[in-house]
Image (tube, rainbow, N blue to C red; front, side, top):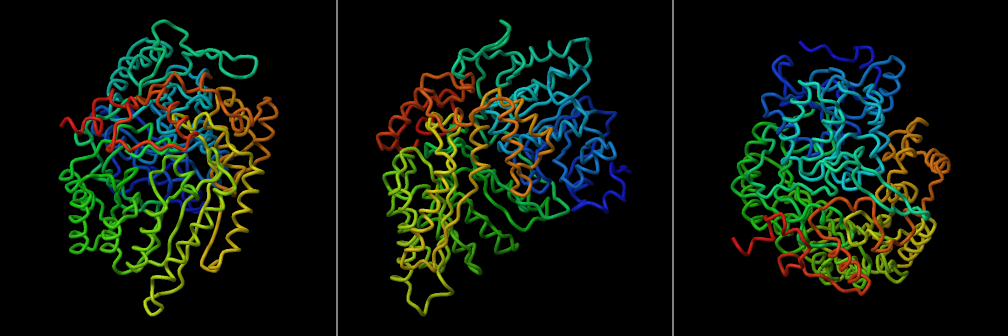
Length: 622
């Protein structure tokens, strides 16, 4: 029987002790004496968030299918337990075995969003693992990071031994086999890392040097040794129907953020929105076989007892067999009382028909993402959505029985004017007028409500907007108040609601998204001041960040408010995601000219992703 790492007394004194006890249904237990490699997957946020992350579930299933490997999990202890662990010198532990993380061979950390960076240091510190890679020796775990933020790993380069660039199903076997050779020999840690750097997709930051110009821009970036590659090529699964998928998902004891079965139907997106990092780094679009998905859905529901299933993709409406798949699941829903959630749908007649079938009892609010208030600005960002699309979709929704609509926008987009942001209020008003003009009073159920939310635009690496400046926070707040006043002036203002994101956290997100290695010391000092859970408003403290930035003479504006030249060496330029820099430059210029680019199925734009020889790039040839 397992012995828990935390005493009953501690568990009874903290919030939600189920976060830390493990033993969930479908979690994997193995005999430690019969394995060679212990791998711990970490999501550096609270359990409820981390348990909802599909990437960790996929890798957990994949690693545990190896007979020589046992993969376990760890999440960030909430501040109440963090304090208890420090006071009592309790090392951080994995959920399955309850063993100390420092005794594992690998600690794999998912990098999903920038504001979790201080939590990464929390994980390392509580695990009693040296926080900086330069201080680790043979016998310490190999710290490896992957996920969206790994596409600019430089702000956290000092804390990781390896970054995995690309999709995890491709080269991990090579890395684990190399590690067994290292573990059972007198090979030095540095020699292991040099060999690991020659596995495609693996970036070892300690093997590279960066030099700066007097103005703070990068003068040169390259490997220290001749036997280390100068570019890292993203790893891609060519055929999504031939890779592992977790058919026995772990069932938590408590409610988590996404408390349902997740069915990944495809990767990538054909749309080419110029602000969207995921749409670029996950190219090309690769769907899964519909019959395989039907079997996965059946198996996951049977093996978990879950009562809801949702799709995972960047744009579910672009999945070619969506009608067949949804019809199958709707039939299953009717016979087995399974709920279906369909995110990422474009609001069109087909989508509304599907949603009317699965929401026939309760009509929840529908979500649109116009992103910009005017057609001019939607063309700039290549949204591929017209005002007519939005209004027609809203009208069909109202006629189908919905009376609540949520609209998502960004403010601070390149070339944005006050006329563009006033369009947020005008579009919201037009949607309410559609309702009043077309839905007879006797058919109305409750008040129509249109809620518009505006986020603060952050330019991300590997997008056409990676060279664009952010607007300053004072200007963002000024624009937000202007839009709020505009909403109050609308005729149907009682049916309208406007809300916007906090500026201070978003500026730091922008800093970390496009920063370089100079930020490693800043993050370390912020963590040393006692700060964790920056993504949570109640724990975010801007003063700690300001103090650390001032101490290291970091000018936030240099990284955030400055438009960058397309000739400048960017901190992530050594990574090859397939999408070429020349394509991104071309898209940046087209954006300034307010010109759109067709989606990948309408016309190939020669972005470069065809080098991976799979997916949408080759559909016409199959």
